Length: 404
Image 1 (spheres, rainbow, N blue to C red):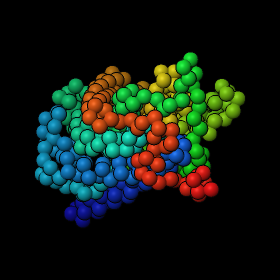
Image 2 (cartoon, one colour):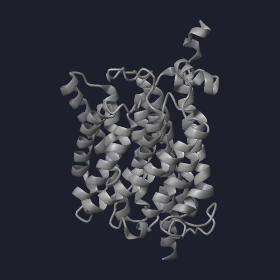
Image 3 (tube, rainbow, N blue to C red):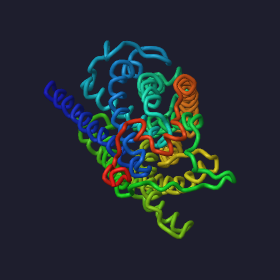
Image 4 (tube, one colour):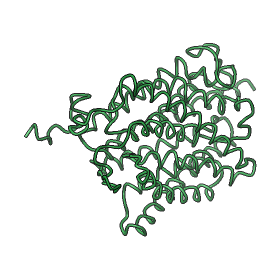
């Protein structure tokens, strides 16, 4: 029996570290997707934000966030510092920490695309410090940490984080973009939307495939165990469901854009795949039929959500609000629809409580940053491109006018 326990411990830890490595690779996916869907004059800042937000998330979650999320404490705060007082339990502590920390970075990555092309680098990074150390862990303490906010969100279910990770990033991004404003020239005085094409659709497509691949670790690893036949059967189901939702989201977005615009829009297809992935994340263990439906609805939602934000003059260069916020909500509600053990009311309460907390606290942090150091670059810097002023580098110097 002791040997069996050791084998289970090893297999469970192996699942966490390998899944965590896959999720870490999603950081590259976000970087490529965002660089491809924005203009070349801002690509260096985009790439800098993505690698630095990952580094910051790892450090802050180690020193503060993990203890807040999983330490013993009240519904609002855990205890300890730098993993102090945390024990291995049924899993390797460090394997669990590594798997959890890459989820924090994913939430932060969502924000990067929404505020792209006009937000200053350092205020953004300071916000990530607060998000990864405090905001994300506190709401995580209410859910995966086990307190359920004193019973307020009892019954809430989110297998791998449609709300806890993806919508959290979406709510934080929405709070920031409301204070930041739209890019210059995005909306005409009469309210018309002026498209600002991305610089590199092959790069955006590569980023989408990387994210799709990384999502198998995101959802599959959230089974948290690999030590039995039932566990590997469950992980296989999660992998298959995750893949189905992405496929259904992509093809649905292609069909819907063809019907509406008479052209299949690649950017919508990419976001359709990602929307399916976000939606299925709350319940990737519910079967292929359910994941297919979730992906189809997600593909429809994203096509209509993108122009919806534009009507509100909320400028989202990469469509992250439509993908992560809108479909994070849909995926969480879908669990209440398709899982007989979970109620819609419990899911709604979780969405509202977590969304309100993240939006209000994020808005307060963004507001303080705006007052103290400013969050938006100057008109001149935005016109020239952030790369030149924030980093002093160009993503493609061989093709710039200065080098000709």
